[in-house]
Image 1 (cartoon, rainbow, N blue to C red):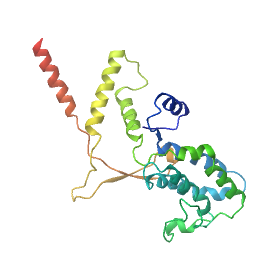
Image 2 (cartoon, one colour):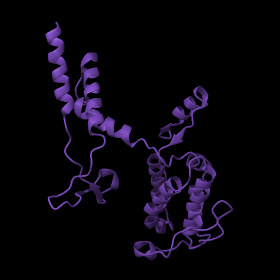
Image 3 (cartoon, rainbow, N blue to C red):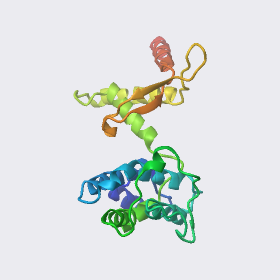
Image 4 (cartoon, rainbow, N blue to C red):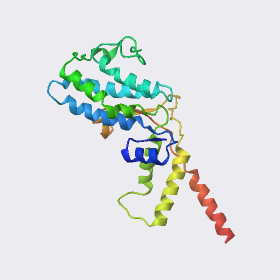
Length: 241
């Protein structure tokens, strides 16, 4: 089972369903760590950390998705190697992950300033990366399934049942069911294409990215065949009355 890193959920699953493997969604863990690293980069002599925030966050994703299921210790070993990497040390990380596997760094990665060993910034990063609580969460990262689909459904549900309005129990139940029908019918929409057959993309500026541009796929328009099926079923039942 994959959830966010809520402590009460983890405790409840651990005590109630000890036989269920509980893993964490990467995005939630990466988001929390990025906030702490951003706060650290505002400290004196730690501004050099700021250009590394996105890279370290991406590294967390890579650690999880590049490691076979059930090898949490290797995920942690890969994760902790970033402390040496940002100091331009790419070998001697440890037994489980002895050296970086990237090739020659190019583009913006090659222009970042390396951290000086034993500097305040390097020590601060190591403290955050090797935090015991964080490493225990890294140990349980899911490299496969994530909670994005559930969060997508919750976002869709607001369109069918806006929070600014109050609905009766029956009304709310019906709206939830219709939202589920709509979500299931359109969950696997393919990417749209232009007339020449080229894949369509759009540039978005999510609030959570603080103005940074994000390239997203443009999906085909949603369908509403479930509405016709509901109407047909309603007419059929009306005829039976």
